[in-house]
Image (cartoon, rainbow, N blue to C red; front, side, top):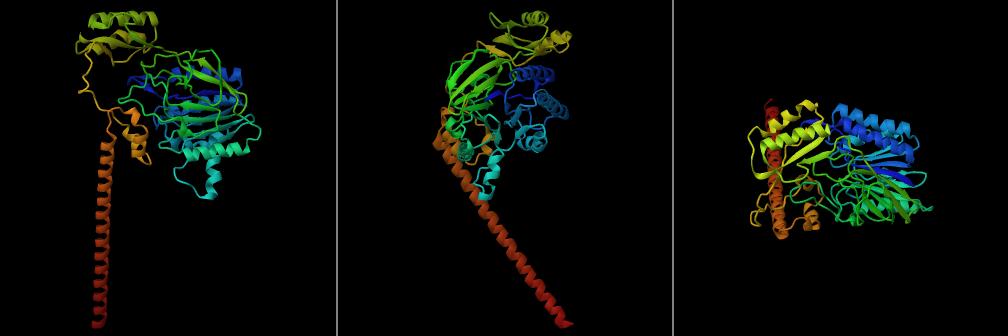
Amino acid sequence: MKIIHTADLHLGQTIYQNYERADEHAHFFAQLEKWCVDEKPDALVVSGDVFDVPQPSAAVKKAFNAHFVRLHARCPEMRIVVTAGNHDSASRLEADRELWELADAHVAGTPPPFADVVEGDAEYWRERFIVRLAKGYVVALPHMNGTRTAQIQSILEKIAAENADGKPVVMTAHLALADSDTTGHDQIGGIATVPATVLGEGYDYLALGHIHRPQTLGEKPDVPGESVELPAPVRRYSGSALHVSCDETFPHSVSLVEIDRHGGSVRVTPLRIDELRHFHVLPESGEAFADAKKAVAAVKRFAEEKKSGYFRLRVRHDADLPADFSQRIYEAIAPFGGEIRFNPKHVVEGAPAPSEASAEKPVFAVADLQQMADPLEFIEKTIADYPGLEIDEVRGLFEEVREEARRLDDEAAKKAEEAARKKKSAGTAENDDEDADEENA
């Protein structure tokens, strides 16, 4: 079984508030199309973050449709499997599921249910995530909050029960696994990770998305174009289609994956992506800028030499930069018609390190926690990602929240009972008045 694995397309991204990247994505898809035509994979697997925002524009949706319809037209025997990531609207992606089936594409937006389902529905919901190919299986799991290990394992067990021929099993996931290299993900407090055990067992290749650096967990760093053969199971991030910030200084690639049999060997070949515009940090060598005029002059030289690309500046923390410094940079690159693109967030060097006492406390991704079935359980499982966090203090805060919720529920129940009593009393009085009127009549 052969697949091409990619992820984190981020279609529609507008970077640094100014620059759209439609032509960069078109350049990527041209390469992806050639690889698909040349390699003739059984499936193209896209592991989440198809779009950069949950509600992409009509133009971005049109481009998405055009890219994948063309891939299907060029490679009609190749199955396309697309799953939702945390940047996508699961329901919006799922809404087009039936239409994409006409193009032999499987789209998975919403994740498996948290709670147990009635027996009559059990087969139906599992089938929604299983893609059967002539040479193997793909379990198409989108991004999901919370732990659904039992549900995932039941899907894998269903496949195991019917996989008498020992065909390879691929599974997708969009999350951060423990021990992954999160270089380039600039988040306060780090990025929350989970152990691989939450995804069950029974797959040969785990096609991961969410982390933008291409990597095979537990193995040496990639060498683009160099194949590595490993025993199953293999867990791999294909990496993002494009650099999404100047922090992503590593090569980007898609993964060509060949699996001989279930429980057998997995051959991974990273296919290097040629970026239409590369990222640079100026000065590319030497000390950080301390003078505005020298910085502007260096930007002009860079623009004239490179003709296109993104850049940011390294500046000293004590550099004397005028209030209109960024404006001067934009004026310097204006003649290049938007091909030279500026990230105004500088890399500041030479500043004294903050003392331990003044260091910021870890910050949680509140939006994720709000969707957890049991946020406290999530915190306890990921406590290692938040050094310095007092778990007992967090437990106490959660108990205070629960007590307040119970108090509010009690008050609401009492108000409802009082309202019902008053309504009943008013109804009784009204009936008494009607009886009295009838007697007087």
